[in-house]
Image (cartoon, rainbow, N blue to C red; front, side, top):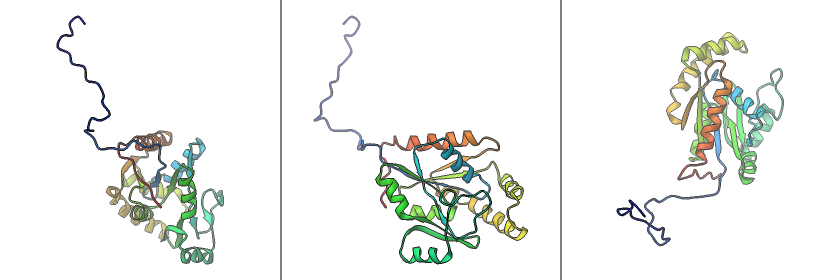
Length: 222
């Protein structure tokens, strides 16, 4: 071919040694934890993901706290008694459980297993303590930390909610400040800017999709 005298053609040979040691697998399901400090908007992120009809299994956390107005049992939380929660602890039915602001919360194992076994990504919303517990149990879980633009912004959001007594609010603010220091325990930090919820969800969705294209995929075992 004209002008091509110095070109070399390399043909692929299946017996050639691979330069890279990596796996090419079918799309394996992920265990995804959406977490962050109080006031960051992780509940809103989860709700918007559900509203979009994204093909995830959204894990419902069990809790002993009273149901708030407009909350739906089985959707927002599984609202159960202290007695039932204690029974589930004894039967080792939780992936993780903890006492949070005076009430118990826990993630049922069976719900997560069913989702992963069916090939669906399992997404759960947890506080920072719960996210770290999941990481210990499932090292390849994908942990996403949702936060606001600043600590001051988080505190203002908590005050504007007006859902706690002054004493409860003080505890939440103190806890939030400690949770911010744990961001480095997560895989990604995503800022949920004021009035930009859809953008936040776009970034979360893109992050999850990118994880499905890793050269060395996460191996989730439960």
